[in-house]
Length: 95
Image (cartoon, rainbow, N blue to C red; front, side):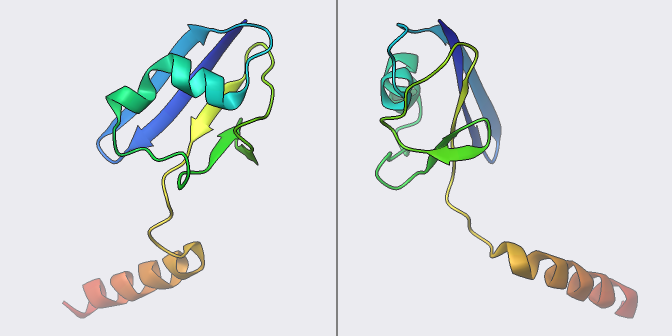
Protein backbone atom coordinates (compact mmCIF):
# COMPACT_ATOMS: atom_id res chain seq x y z
CA UNK A 1 0.00 0.00 0.00
CA UNK A 2 1.14 3.54 -0.71
CA UNK A 3 1.60 5.99 2.22
CA UNK A 4 3.67 9.09 2.93
CA UNK A 5 5.73 10.30 5.88
CA UNK A 6 6.06 14.03 6.56
CA UNK A 7 8.26 16.06 8.89
CA UNK A 8 8.88 19.79 8.81
CA UNK A 9 11.98 21.51 10.11
CA UNK A 10 12.28 25.30 10.31
CA UNK A 11 14.32 25.43 7.09
CA UNK A 12 13.08 22.34 5.26
CA UNK A 13 10.05 20.15 4.61
CA UNK A 14 10.47 16.43 4.15
CA UNK A 15 7.73 14.45 2.44
CA UNK A 16 8.53 10.86 1.56
CA UNK A 17 6.22 8.53 -0.38
CA UNK A 18 6.72 4.82 0.02
CA UNK A 19 5.16 1.40 -0.32
CA UNK A 20 4.61 -0.54 2.89
CA UNK A 21 3.04 -3.95 3.62
CA UNK A 22 -0.72 -3.97 4.23
CA UNK A 23 -0.30 -4.65 7.97
CA UNK A 24 2.12 -1.78 8.65
CA UNK A 25 1.92 0.43 11.71
CA UNK A 26 2.89 4.09 12.05
CA UNK A 27 6.23 3.10 13.63
CA UNK A 28 7.02 0.59 10.89
CA UNK A 29 6.32 3.18 8.21
CA UNK A 30 8.54 5.76 9.91
CA UNK A 31 11.37 3.25 10.24
CA UNK A 32 10.98 2.06 6.65
CA UNK A 33 11.02 5.64 5.32
CA UNK A 34 14.58 6.26 6.52
CA UNK A 35 13.60 9.60 8.04
CA UNK A 36 15.14 8.72 11.42
CA UNK A 37 18.58 8.40 9.81
CA UNK A 38 18.01 11.57 7.78
CA UNK A 39 16.92 13.59 10.84
CA UNK A 40 18.90 12.31 13.85
CA UNK A 41 17.28 14.92 16.12
CA UNK A 42 13.98 13.02 15.91
CA UNK A 43 13.11 11.16 19.08
CA UNK A 44 9.89 9.20 18.79
CA UNK A 45 9.70 9.04 22.58
CA UNK A 46 9.37 12.86 22.62
CA UNK A 47 7.92 13.80 19.21
CA UNK A 48 4.22 13.20 18.76
CA UNK A 49 2.98 11.53 15.60
CA UNK A 50 -0.28 11.65 13.73
CA UNK A 51 -2.14 10.65 10.60
CA UNK A 52 -3.73 13.50 8.63
CA UNK A 53 -3.45 15.92 11.56
CA UNK A 54 -4.85 13.62 14.23
CA UNK A 55 -2.50 12.52 17.01
CA UNK A 56 -2.12 8.75 17.07
CA UNK A 57 -0.04 5.99 18.63
CA UNK A 58 3.05 4.46 17.01
CA UNK A 59 1.23 1.12 17.07
CA UNK A 60 -1.76 2.39 15.04
CA UNK A 61 -2.40 0.48 11.80
CA UNK A 62 -2.21 2.35 8.50
CA UNK A 63 -4.53 2.41 5.51
CA UNK A 64 -3.66 2.98 1.87
CA UNK A 65 -3.04 6.67 1.18
CA UNK A 66 -2.39 7.69 4.81
CA UNK A 67 0.00 10.54 5.56
CA UNK A 68 2.07 9.91 8.69
CA UNK A 69 3.17 13.17 10.30
CA UNK A 70 5.92 13.67 12.86
CA UNK A 71 5.38 16.79 14.93
CA UNK A 72 7.98 19.10 16.44
CA UNK A 73 7.51 20.26 20.03
CA UNK A 74 5.58 23.50 20.41
CA UNK A 75 7.98 26.30 21.36
CA UNK A 76 5.38 29.03 21.86
CA UNK A 77 2.09 28.80 23.70
CA UNK A 78 -0.53 29.20 20.92
CA UNK A 79 -2.72 31.21 23.30
CA UNK A 80 -0.06 33.93 23.54
CA UNK A 81 0.54 34.33 19.78
CA UNK A 82 -2.36 36.79 19.18
CA UNK A 83 -1.22 38.86 22.16
CA UNK A 84 2.38 38.89 20.89
CA UNK A 85 1.19 40.10 17.47
CA UNK A 86 -0.73 42.97 19.08
CA UNK A 87 2.29 43.91 21.21
CA UNK A 88 4.62 43.82 18.20
CA UNK A 89 2.21 45.95 16.17
CA UNK A 90 1.95 48.49 19.02
CA UNK A 91 5.75 48.64 19.28
CA UNK A 92 6.05 49.25 15.52
CA UNK A 93 3.58 52.16 15.71
CA UNK A 94 5.61 53.77 18.50
CA UNK A 95 8.74 53.94 16.29
